Amino acid sequence: MTSLHRRFPCVVDMEAAAKRRMPKFVHDYLIGGLGRESSVRRNVASLDTIELMPRYLSEAPAPDMGITLFGKRFDAPFGVAPLGLAGLLWPGCEVPLAKAARAHNIPHVLSTFANRAMETIGPIVGDNGWFQFYPPNDPAMEEDMIGRAARAGYETLVLTVDIPAPTRRERDIRNGMSVPPVLDLKTMFQIATHPHWARHVLRNGIPDFENLSPYYPKGSSLQESAAFVGRTMTGHLGETRVRRIRDAWNGRMLVKGVLDVSEAQAYMALGADGLIVSNHGGRQLDAAPTAVSVLPGIRHALGPDVLIAADGGVRSGLDVARYLALGADFVLIGRPFVFASAAVGAEGGGHLMTILKAELSGAMAQLGCRTVADLPSFLHAPRAN
Image (cartoon, rainbow, N blue to C red; front, side, top):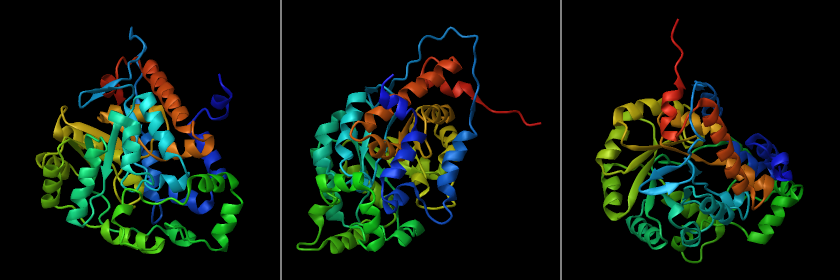
């Protein structure tokens, strides 16, 4: 066993190390939600309520964790969720995460709000890459971004529908968290006392929204550019816009941010190739249901053949198994990959992928489960008294 595995055998250890290495205003942005942050807590807690029934009278061979999505075979049923502002949270982490996803043969989803451009990440991740699209409210910009994603090599668009308006995240208000950050005495002290993070900023430069920077008003300052992003990346996506994007995109399209059964059915009728059940990490509406609570109903309504993913609260390979048992085809994981990058460095993403695979394989072996497709049969539903 390597020293790295002894130091960081699980996500909890990497999360603790990341907290020590990140300035508070950055760490608060990463872990926080809004309001009382009950949605963030419920995402994690809801997974802990899901029980799986082991069956030891089994002759199951070594578990097969592989899945096939859109005709491509992946080595595990989880992937890297879109990470907005990842280049600020842990500067320089985006390229290593893309490389690790390709090396481990799992999906990698690049956020519109990533700090590295789709033209940079797309060729690195290859056909393991999907592009998460927050549609701007400028039709010409929307059309151009769709074309850029295709030219960058992306074949799957993840249309994200759950950020119709800015949110008030109290941690960020108190901390002055923004792009660029507010550099007052408080934040400067935090940066000075977290030299690992500061060195990564110096090495990688002040992060920018590289997917959006081509559209900034000419000659705008950093503050003016940030204001442009705030004005442009808002608004609900009605049926007309969803149809327009579906018609403009020639590849596969998943819709992310789905919680309601009727909307799940509507997105499929509008031409989606699949759905991602998500409450955005508990960061948009503190009263929103968890993916755990709505996933079974959506699966039941849409049937077994619709591709459904889920995210929110995953902290282990066992949590991946729980989502799959509830009816997901695969799972996206976000915050833990930033924890891993901050705790370990460039090797963090790959280290976490190795751990998650081992945890998932171990859970499946304990259950007597041969393939991930079999996991729903191991879901334990206690009988009512």
